[in-house]
Length: 434
Image (cartoon, one colour):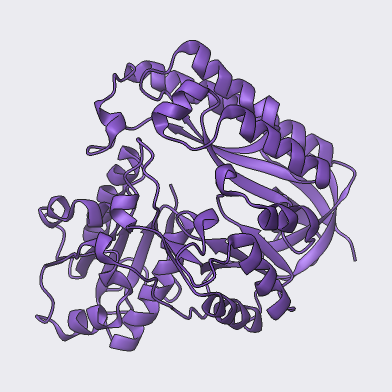
């Protein structure tokens, strides 16, 4: 879970200063935090703290509530506004918190008129959350930049048409809606002109991109057009993709386009076919392994990350070991491990659950296996040269998503070559080459 302040945010206790935005969870929330910051500034909204919640796990909801309480303690006179997926799914629960002044939905948080009403005082109901399933289009927002970030995000898609049995997010985001290609290009060109060297395409289900647009351009086709129309974009990165939705155009893009970073994050969740069926995933274990092998054969330097769930209901020890083995069989490097967390209203929440200590132990073992795979990859980088995006003084990230602590001069936001001299504590160590 990540907590971020949006660009231009006031610090805790700034009272009547600029609106502070505390954003938890995904890259999409980070993008939308910037949209809210822009709307709040345009409306003249001051003395407010907006908490942009996450609902992916029970822990993320707990952290969202914790952030709300902290915001009230640090800003006793501020207007506390709560939004995001957790607020969209259960607005009543957040409205019942004594610290909260307003609850707004995921659609409302992106509308300029919401912030105009909040700025007027008294012009906004305490709870304003519409039915997210009624939305049919993704609104277009031109974001100027991302404070404290060397890379920028572009929202290409919202919502999800799939219903994995463990996932509550479609009820917070709605059905899949794609931004037109022209709008994606316009936003990317705007950010490149502002000096960003790397852009991350983000959404809820980005491999579902385009099915609702005229001509149904897929993610691969759209990204090709984006790179052709924004020649100044040096590095393009994709957020999480679904191997079941990868078509020939996307496969060709990630294996043959050098401006697409050699790092793919996969939504895999399990390495056992029975558990995958009970999750209502659309791929089999063998498909994931074969996909990784085919991409690596075409582009040997590529690395893979993955989302994996430990302790899904009915998961046997054998099934869990299949997920551990998937790290080696698919060649995974960067893991996001989630202990299974039942979400009320999802089918998985009605399945026979595993004991909490078993779930916790399996998550620990899966993380340990992931860290070992990561460390093997980092060791393999020693002695080589990597192109890094400098994220802050002395810290950059390679195209393959490894952090590098470096010596030598390089400005934040620059792309520089670094000689890798060592690895420890989950990151590389290197020296900038002049």
